[in-house]
Image 1 (cartoon, rainbow over the protein chains, first blue to last red):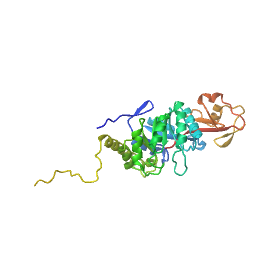
Image 2 (image 1 turned 180 degrees about the horizontal axis):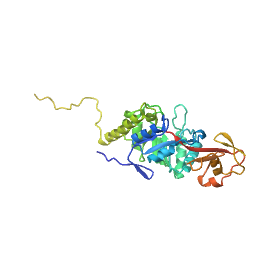
Image 3 (image 1 turned 90 degrees about the vertical axis):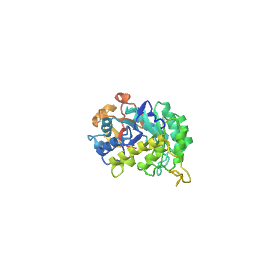
Image 4 (image 1 turned 90 degrees about the horizontal axis):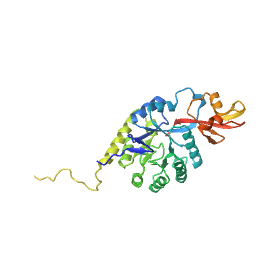
Length: 257
Length: 66
């Protein structure tokens, strides 16, 4: 079996290759249990205005600190470089580390990335000392450009965010995996266990997902399924699958009587 | 004096600094980030950052997201 190198992001190592988002859950208790079942060590958060009407209730940070998670703030909802950089700077002031999941979106309907703005923002934030995890498309050339610009992790989308369509372009995800020396973590579009397994079978270093768990009918059950799928897919990849052949190849010797 | 906090007109004392506003809103001790007139205020600068009349403040926290 090929060596299962540990997932290293920034100066930390992680056993879990599933990264999970904290958005869209029905309740905090469901989110807390789902995160636990997923085995995730890294969870993403967004940055938004304090809702003055909800003060006094338990807040997200309390839940995540209790769970001992590495918190990965994102720049979700930013449609230009300046806004994404501003959100990254705000995240830095929250003193939760120097990780940032950089999203600079280019289109409201597809939520696909504006890759040139992402590239510029990656360079600036990496130069400022952030550990940049860059959300991008599945173009392996752009993946390498982001790595060269200083991205610590490159995160190609499997399908549009929240679409649940899985890995739409497995060949290109495979090209990204082969081209990168930093971790390649699929972000966005995963819908169910087979999508997670498929991604890992392509050789990715991790999968980040949110909607697939949060909006499943049983979020906790789905979290468990996706954890198992991540382990199965990764193990299958490391074990070296058989090649696909056009014709049959008998499993039993030729009949000799 | 009147300032705008998270989109709402808010009365704060003249010469208020950031910690005064956070205290007034019951937010002292919480992990927050702040924009003042569109610019990020470093946490280390909160104690000496004074608000002017009409200042636009955004108090930012972590929320669920993917």
